[in-house]
Amino acid sequence: MADLVIRQGTLSDIQAIMALEQGSIEHPWESKAVEALITDPNKTCLIAELDGTIAAYVGAESVLDESNIGNIVTHKDYRGRGIATRLFNALLEELKAQGITKVFLEVEHDNAPAIALYKRSGFADYGYRRDYYGKGKDAVLMSLELC
Image (tube, rainbow, N blue to C red; front, side):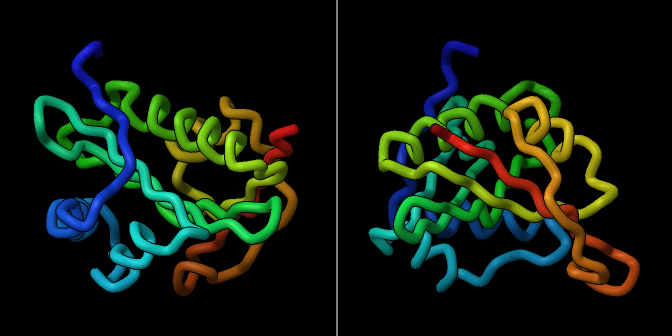
C-alpha cells in the first residue's frame, strides 16, 4: 500500500475525524476532545490517509515518560488492509522518539481484532475493568515497555 500516508493530525482534519468517529465506534469522542488531541503538546494524533481520504487515526496522551493510547479508529470500508497496523506502529515509533518508555491502553474484552493488533505489537495484559464500556462491556488493560 505505497499510497498510504501517515502524518500528524491538523485542525483541518477535525471534521473528517468526527465523521470517522460517528460512523465507526459506539461512543465517539466530542470535537473538543479531538481538537485537544491535535493542539495539546502532551498529545499525539496521527492520521492514515489513503488516496486523499482519512482512513484511520490514532491518539495518545503522554505524561513524563508514559503514554496512554486513547483511540484508534479505522473506517469500516478500510478495515482488513493493514492500515491500523501501520498506523499503530508509526505511533509507537513516534512515542519512542518523544522519549516515552511505557505505553498503556484499554480495549473492550470482545474486540478480538484490536486485541490481536496490540498483542502483535508486543502489548501484554495487566488488568481488567468490569463494565468499563457499559454494562457487560469489560476492558482489558494492556501495556508495553518501549525501551
